[in-house]
Amino acid sequence: MCAPVHFEVAYAINAWMTPGAVVDTALAVQQWETLRATYEGLGHEVELLDPVPGLPDMVFAANGAFVVDGVAVGARFAHPERAAEAPAHAAWLEAHGFGPVTPTVGTHEGEGDLTVVGDLVLAGTGFRTDRRAHAEIQERTGRPVVGLELVDPRFYHLDTALFPLDDTTVAYYPGAFSDGSRRVLERLYPDAVVASEADALVLGLNAVSDGRHVVLPVAATGLAEQLRERGFVPVPVDLSELLKGGGGPKCCTSELRPRPL
Ligand SMILES: CN(C)C(=N)NCCC[C@H](N)C(=O)O
Image (cartoon, rainbow, N blue to C red):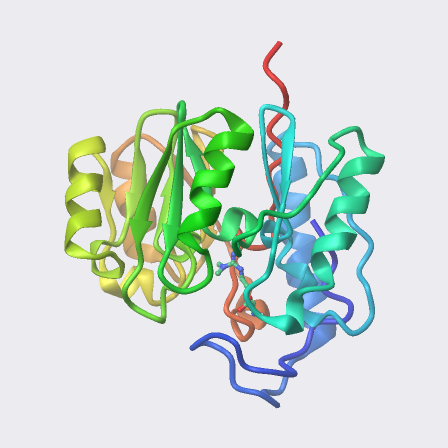
């Protein structure tokens, strides 16, 4: 995680951002601290990346790299405004034993468009991630990559529209995906939790599950209820200030998946 001490909406690179939007940075930090404390309270260890002045989106730590089985693949951001975040992530990862960390040739924004469900990597494309990066990630991780096409600019990263619940299933909002990708999801995850548009529009799918607890935006009340009915424990958090940048709990969280023992 990376504290939002330099967070502001200085440019607009997604449909949620209005340049010059009034941001209460102190409140953003307070909300982010609550998220961090929530993870620690659930027993998860949190590592911190130093924020860099002039990189207001660095709080969205999920986007700087993709790590699975102890292998870290460096991001190549689609927008120049965020490009300098990638070397900061690479330096941290290399200093912590994940190196060498090099970016892909095609653009990809780490866990924004990449997630792991069991053996599979699910990979979004359509707005930020180049299909070439999907093939590179498969080569570099040795895990099968399933490409999913995003079609609605409000859901510009896969993690705005889908998250893994455990090793076997996911929650997702079908309206964010192309017809073919929806059929892929139905085939792979017939028992998925299907979220409503109302919950997707508060970035309810930008959630983090440890297989039992699901940390999700407080406004996603319908989704929380669906999760409860399925035996999960919803843990709502309020990140309203960071929503002005187009992010929620998952965006603030880069998962460092270790090498299997
Ligand atoms: C949930 N999402 C989409 C993330 N994984 N990251 C948020 C990135 C926000 C940043 N302003 C941008 O547009 O890149």
